[in-house]
Length: 276
Image (tube, one colour):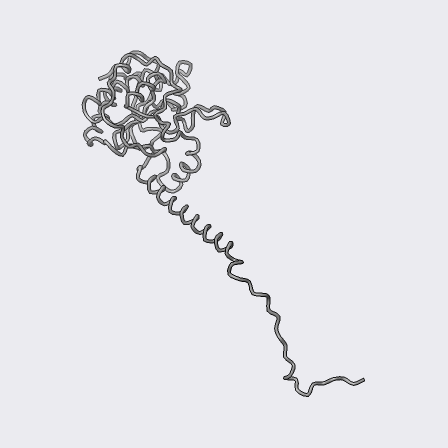
């Protein structure tokens, strides 16, 4: 049997296999997906930076003043809060405020710029440091006038600012205090560095105070929806925990004194509160 042998091996040409070329159009959807993903991640990163800076601008409060505090508020607390537009809602509060609260004037001018959840702060219409000292002096005077009913201490909510508390002797008699007092550990309210305050009021008084322009709800001052069991307190905050706008002059300081008296009555159950 004859075997064919080429005279010149170089005459044998081997053509390597090459896959069929794909046009650029074939990869276009993938390019779009990658570009869209990069754009989305970049926008998320920028949003996080801006939101974190806004959190830091609020200053120290009850939550850790770092990225962990920001994460806890933004992703774990915020879903349970009121929308900003709902902080002026009073539809769930009954009528029947105390006479001295009903007699309060309407606050003049626009409401100040309020930002944040925890902490919550006032960013406009802020008074001088002297007014802050006057409010602290008011705290001291109220406690001095009611030594067996009230006391002053660091806020259990804020941990950086002074607060008014129900006296331990009153708090110990749990049968006579409301669930609000138990949840707040006896804290009526506290002052902030911007001279605004957080303060508990009765639902009836809270309705009038908000409608007359002196306050708005804390973002957690709500009853949670049915799928959360209608819980009334998140982080110890009930539905009448209000942010009271900083007093700008002596007349507004007198209004604040009235509100502190109303808060003390509500939280202690005593009608014998002596104001300065």
